[in-house]
Image 1 (cartoon, helix red, strand yellow):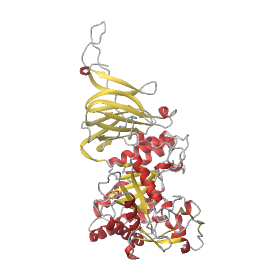
Image 2 (cartoon, rainbow, N blue to C red; image 1 turned 90 degrees about the vertical axis):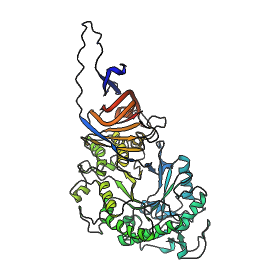
Image 3 (cartoon, rainbow, N blue to C red; image 1 turned 180 degrees about the horizontal axis):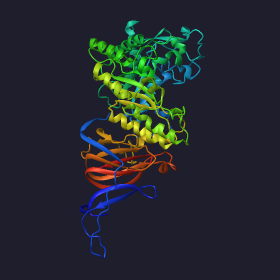
Image 4 (cartoon, helix red, strand yellow; image 1 turned 180 degrees about the vertical axis):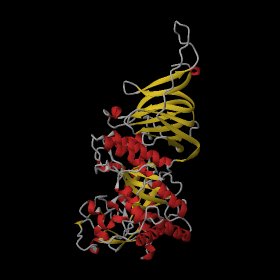
Length: 562
């Protein structure tokens, strides 16, 4: 290694072995040649991409963006994930008093004991939370909003003339609205009602002294989600909703009623709603509303205005987090949706459809190939659209995406897309996010988490403060930059090269000092791995405010500088 006073700049280039070689451009000193003259330094390598960092523009990264659904069932789950969710269609008709549930169209419209064979009230949820606490994860649990829950565990329910009220119990948000009986951990199961405020009280009792619904829990917090994908209840839960969809007015009234009942018991409880299934629910409540692409007449406009009025009357926010699901609708141009592209062999067009698809979350210059952009006639940029509505209508509400997937479960393209998603969530200020895996084998997809969590195998993570960074060509390269509030001077970057050629990338503007430790994932490094994870790719002293990397094709590189 050259003495530090001789090194003026350095470049990381792919080595012949597939790793990273270091090229040093030097100034001063003697060449050691017999001619006694110093040859000129090599010309600087021209950058393909410039990433401009603005150190003054920062915000905290929520710890809850590194989440997943149903962690206990994930094979090869990455370490140090932060949030788990008990959600999905199965939970809409969950009866906490008996643990009976019905998955609706997902499985035979059947009342059964799938979630727990226990007869102890709320055991399916208690055990879920306890498992998360053992893993060091916060939890999101579902509270029932639709109105009916399973009344037995006796198998399929007729959908000929739904609902069959002999097979279900009625949800009541407040126990005091139906009876003067006090809350109990062993509610009678022969009456007609299941009470949601009593459900919350019972969970808190089961974790007595921990403050799971408070602002400073002694373990990990528990958040509450108001049901799941309500725009689709008339199809996914035909057995309880019937064929008529819930109207937006009825849904908003239900939300206000349940949120009020829960906040009466636990004022600091964090409540997630609306839990949209996807774009058309956000846009026009599954074709009910007359939304227009550039208008202020989308469902969020209506919902946020109503919730602000109700919350002002109540005296505090009733819904804290606006939640939606995002299964990318992008296609490869031949009609193949990216979420269906989970094999080991993909065409170039399919790879690019996957790795570009996260840009629809934020990029106002990117138009994906999908029916959504046909409806809008413009880029989607869904996070900005929602954030602007929140800012203008009900400031302070947070955003979450509690189900998402971009495909590529068994291909390096999936690694890139997932790493990109996590970078976007931090850069755009999301409160929470939970991946929903769609394939049985998904090592490449889960690897995206490893670029941020325990990337060195020694419990090192991406920083907790996002620093603004703008790429000159986001179609090819994006870099996410963070600092660490617990270690002044530490900077962690995740650089993603979506292109099929190496990209010389200069990152400028962020003060750097110390040693850069590099960890990388490419198709070549991942090929023999199980699970797929970053490999060490060298170290180098750094200083100043500029760093130039040569990023291999289709790669994710984590740079930890301290």
